[in-house]
Length: 380
Ligand code: COA
Image 1 (cartoon, rainbow, N blue to C red):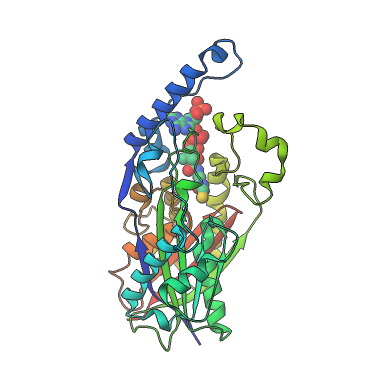
Image 2 (image 1 turned 180 degrees about the horizontal axis):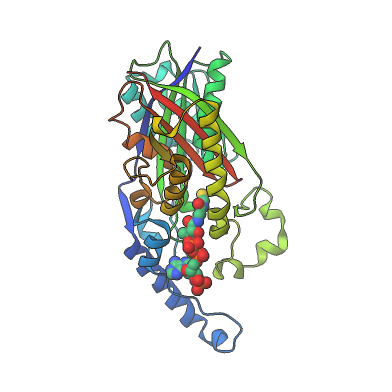
């Protein structure tokens, strides 16, 4: 049982929001809030909110646009969040629905029937509910067999999911495992927070990991991998099942209006940048050494998509020279940060030119901190 990557799949929402559209809505919200709070601001009891800026966003992050599943309410200054209607328990949940769409694309790309899949993992940053597992719903929607479960390793969920699938195949538990990364990141984003309102987008990806004896001929051999975690408070989301029990906090409605909610994504972006770049560069170079690979053998780096400058720096450290954009492809300009899906989108969209024996690496990093690297070689 040698686990390999058979294919990937992608589902992208139809609606996108440009930086200009996002900033226009944010600034309208700020003007509204400042005028509603004019007296308190004047008296020095509240601080006026500042406008956002599209040039800053692109310069600081590389992000130009993001896809979202619910555009209009995000851009409504009186709402400033997606609206996703509740579905009946008998309907498929939205997270399972988009995961299944990406999974169907991966199955099509491998020429695989859903009934041949014997495990489904949903690995993502935000799970819609505690249970039953979203993955079991995806298993049912696809008509897959075997078993299914959810896991969350934030932005690193894809590589940790692929490694989990690999372990299941080696242990003889399954032969064909779908790892799905449905990310509705707009729902954990505080669109009223100037520091982070531009960061995320929505998408779903899927990776089909299979035993090589059933995989299509043109699969990807996994030639090395490493996972690492190191605790940090610099990226946090305190949403959880105990929230409603902290009575004082629940009653404090001013928290969200001040943009201070910690039940959504919060980060110290500068520190993340400084700490994660060396951590990831070290992880990749150590693993290259361990596998007897030098940088000239690496054709492409499919990196997590959070910040363009971070990816330029990591690539430079790993390759020992400035790296052309074609060698470390960027999708965050169009998709923004899509958490666990980012490196898989880059791999999915920028790997069709690989020939037999070409080597590349998929690398994820994010909250936890968590990071994972997987070296792959094209087999035909
Ligand atoms: N519009 C205009 N100005 C803004 C702004 C906005 N939307 N947001 C922040 N600013 C201002 C700040 O107030 C600050 O002003 P000051 O210098 O007068 O204090 C200045 O811009 C710089 O802010 P800072 O937060 O330090 O920006 P940055 O250069 O660190 O860029 C990120 C912010 C988030 C783009 C960047 O830190 C990042 O991407 N870090 C990595 C994050 C990451 O990978 N996270 C993983 C998540 S999974």
